[in-house]
Amino acid sequence: MKKIFAANWKLFKSPKETREFFTQFKELSSKATGEVVFFPSAISLEATSTSLQGTNIKWGVQNAYFQAQGAFTGENSAQVVKELGGTYVLIGHSERRKIFGESDALIADKVAFTQSLGLIPMLCIGETLEEREAKHTFRVCETQLLQGLSKADKSKPVVIAYEPVWAIGTGKVATPEQVAETHTDVFSILQKLGFEQSPILYGGSVKPDNAAGLIKQPHVNGFLVGGASLEAKSFIDIATV
Ligand code: PEP
Image (cartoon, rainbow, N blue to C red):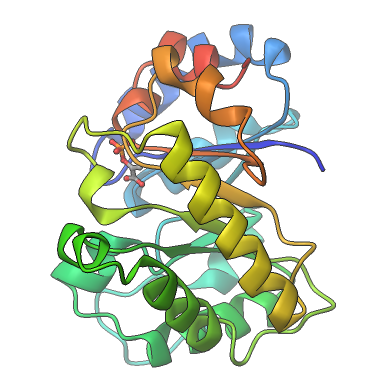
């Protein structure tokens, strides 16, 4: 399976900073050993689209509503992302779940709508520290997958990003053993649901110095990277493992 290296820029980088980043990144990008995907903030999508024209670097939006247009103040349209040349929609990131109260039911609608447009949902799942300590990691991943994929089309692509919440933006990366165990569990759940073709990315404090150890683990098909994707050199170092 091809590897995927995805960058989640959260609420960082203006359109100007985005253009400057890609001027530098495009020179390095041919070294990447898999597909590279960027999720800039919505206001920098057009700068991303223009900067990446004529390259094989993919991009998408960090969140999009499950309708193409209408009275949904503040939301993003996946249809517009498609028109601009985007490929992916990031769905159910833990910050969307926690800060913006997104439910598994809403996430399921977003996954289905994204697929209906021919875009690829990248569905994020993962447990909190309390859930891991209570040994509920499997159950949490199973519920989030079962519900998040409940309206998804098995014949169309979906990418899964396993991101333990306690590892996101904390510098506390999961150990290779924890990643191996949970990715094997996630794969078995996907198999049971009929989505075993879906790549499973790991996310949570991935850095150039821990990426090589993590990519070797079973069922790790790439990474979703936050902080370390904001600088071209560190992201390409991760995308060349
Ligand atoms: C993320 O935002 O999805 C993420 C994994 O962030 P970081 O790499 O900074 O932990």
